[in-house]
Image (cartoon, rainbow, N blue to C red; front, side, top):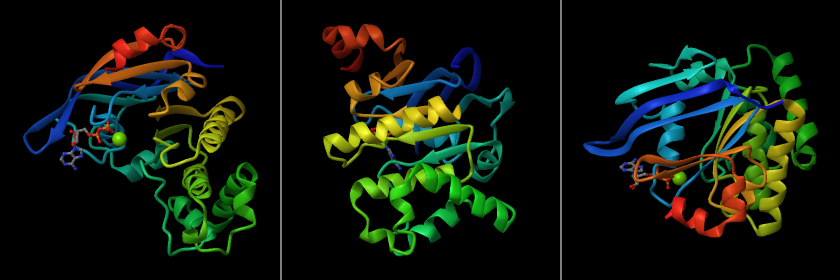
Length: 241
Ligand SMILES: Nc1ncnc2c1ncn2[C@@H]1O[C@H](COP(=O)(O)OP(=O)(O)O)[C@@H](O)[C@H]1O
Ligand SMILES: [Mg+2]
């Protein structure tokens, strides 16, 4: 069950940027245990920057980040993986020169022994059976949709509690967008996975999330239920533009 009253991730007054350029100007939001929270906003609003900051890939200029009550200050991506946080960056990045199996093994890089890795890969293949038939194929030979599944499967090998997802639908044909988002919904519903998802396919993501946050010019302009945005296109336009 989603429990927004028990935040798993807390983002508190986060400020960051590139060089001297301020991008995030005091972002506060939280993701409750078991929730899917959608992060929307126009291009360049800072959505990817926020995910990168949470995952320790971008310096935190000001503010605080907590996961399960524990500070993420100076936590490195590897520490976050150990804490059960996985991150799938924008642009379904996989190692195209490596096989599907080799990609999955890299996904499980922090697992200490072969048995755990084997179990992790088996679990991921149950969720993405299309990859099982292609284990020995180079990732370059996969379609866009299959590469996206591989990127997601790589993140699942470690059985994360929390998934940061940056535009999983990018470059996918419309039926595949729906398929990818329903897979994420399934991971949430059946596996109890908590998700913070950035998505440009706003109407689609509003259908799978319990809460939505909109970023505009480095600030949160909406944080609440998706329902008012679903039923009122004017309201959606207002928070978005
Ligand atoms: N590595 C970088 N160096 C300098 N500026 C960047 C870099 N990455 C992103 N930006 C700038 O930061 C702003 C926010 O980008 P981004 O977080 O990618 O937005 P979004 O994901 O919402 O489209 C944009 O103005 C973008 O040009
Ligand atoms: Mg982005």
